[in-house]
Image (cartoon, rainbow, N blue to C red; front, side):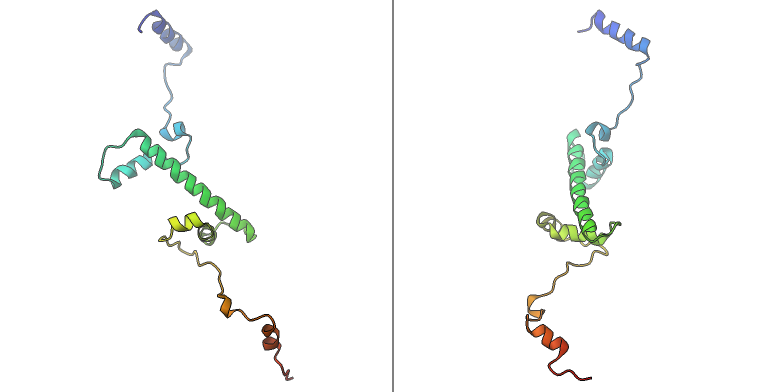
Length: 142
């Protein structure tokens, strides 16, 4: 539909100075923090197929951003529970290992400086009455 109305709108935009459109990145359009262009580039370089749909990189970037937000929230909670203010790899490890779904998904991942979950086998713990006698001893020598 190319009539007078199209020309009039163009003239109005030109008069207002709206002739230049500001470029908006795919990341900004999607409302994400993770770079969509970088995700697309990585997808192209690591897959056999060089042709990708335009939404595949947006979808993957949004999924990665969501997963990272969840892990950081759990790690922040673990950090707060231990009364610390700095988020370390230890808290990320605790967050992942204490969540069943993340533990299953990242079971083959090693986090440097993460440590292990604290666990003492029940057989190694002293029995209720036995603990005091062994600690103080039946015969106290001075």
